[in-house]
Length: 608
Image (cartoon, rainbow, N blue to C red; front, side, top):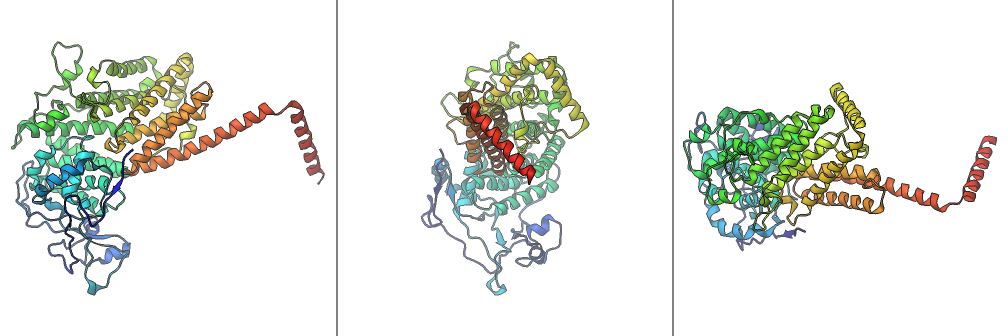
């Protein structure tokens, strides 16, 4: 169980007396337009707050002007502009995981001289607290809780292991003044703040991150811009902005393909080369590839368009090799395809097995309609998933490294395999999905048909299952086993907030399976032990969602829906058991007496 340690505003583990910025009447260098007007491309009067924000009841936020601080470049090239370090906005500090604080204190002096220029001195005026003009504008006081030097270590501790595409921290630190990295640093700042101050409003930092990324998309296109967009779209989706995340995903894929990041030529022609930077570019492409598949599988609102895109980019190495800059010659995608059959020996990383797992998901989605009506295609896809599990090396069969540390890449690889198995077998398992129709936090309900084609597909699947009736229980067993395996992933002694937010959708999918089994009478045999086991699996899913809701808004929505359905199923099951007990205890004479009493009552009502 994670520990929540609240730290006073007046104390800091690194500074006994952290400096607070005094209120100032004017903020030199701030932009002439607020964020709201700039994002809507409207003229701003520059007042604090401006008239448009007052009329629309919006938060009026100004950020420092960056004119004169950078040199614009063309194409894929970039220049480095030396910029003065400035402070970043602050909010009250809370801490969920103390693991990164000790190292944070040691690194703080280094970060103070390299604070991201893109995040300077946020000045905000709230519509809820009007101030007389004579008092001057209001400025949030800086607090170390969400300062740049604290949020970047938080990002690397909490978020980076799940999506390890950016440079390792020790390689990023010397480059924080580079202009090309400013959008990425702004996004990392916001994401890191979500973990150390989750109960506070991070909207100002999000606004700065989004504005920085929007400007970068229009003024420069490079690998670091793609990284910033990739990290931002993941965090937007987890926070509860799925539509914005999907739109940003489409733009990110478009930019990555325009830059040619799906080819190794992008790396070899880069002006700045190093082993760790080359590896970062490989990871950027494959991370975007994996995310494209995850979005398609989790939300079922997009297609896995990168699945068929040609690429010769080498596969990522192990995480420890990346962190220590001991990067071997990368294996190729063809090596991964020929594994276990080729005489060529290649030690594939956990990231590579994650890529392979999302490829299997892509094949299932690509052939889903054919598998619904053709048992042979369905069986071939199951062979694909089973082969992935059976041929894993001993060191990859669980989500732990040899030294006992969690292996997030293999965690996600196993998560993808189990969720793909549920998606493959769900329709043929003939589950009663009616109770879970209200759960749509991640994707539309499975039984919902929105087009004539989907109606025909559902009918064909039902007909195939009826014709294959003896095997229905086998499909149900596949689904139940996969849901229970996802449950085992929830029991790992690792804070669930350290996993990718896509695990929320895996938990939701498992909860739908368990709720369907519970509403239908437990594990299938009506046994009390089976019923109790399924009920505890539902409770486990609720607990996992509750823990992840401390950071991700998507988990909060899913938690409310799963708890609501679980409460309804529990009520129905309780009523059913009470009726069963009543019928067991009542005698035939009692039944006849109640029937006679009801007959007399009806006769009296008829007379009246």
